[in-house]
Image 1 (tube, rainbow, N blue to C red):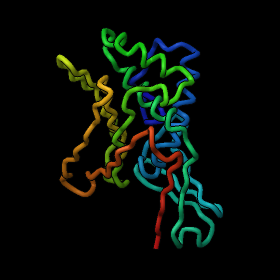
Image 2: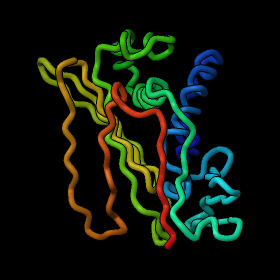
Image 3: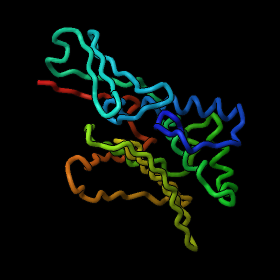
Image 4: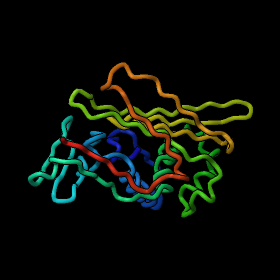
Length: 221
């Protein structure tokens, strides 16, 4: 699991230098895909990431709080923060690599063809499977506790084999399904939260048909 998601304890010890270089590029695009740190409250390898506003303003996370540094009047109206553009293929490959890394040893060989695609320069045109995820985030709050939870589920039957990666990273929730049945599509259902502070806002993302940049509109009026 990438350190940019706040991981400090789940590591792969058998990754070669070539693969490490490839996956570092994927993770760079994943860092551009996820919401800014002032929303996720995730402390990555280099600390909390900064988000800059045109005109000189800066907003970032500090522990369970949000800190704003600005020039006069920059945050007195609506502002838009834009993440850097990302490659959907590389973002999906970064997430798929997380799923494969958590597989039991006896399951890895089943993914041989998928792994070949993963470490290649090929895109979705050469990927026969569904490439979707359900991405959720909750609003930042000083009452939210730090959270890192990663689970890999497996479901198999006579004619189906599917996996589900579930990851909770403070205010970010990632659900990544993978099925070897090419015609199968994941359907997500959200259970109502007990309180507003526990509520996650989910968006289903089809990486084969998705934008390449995220923008966040903030209103301080």
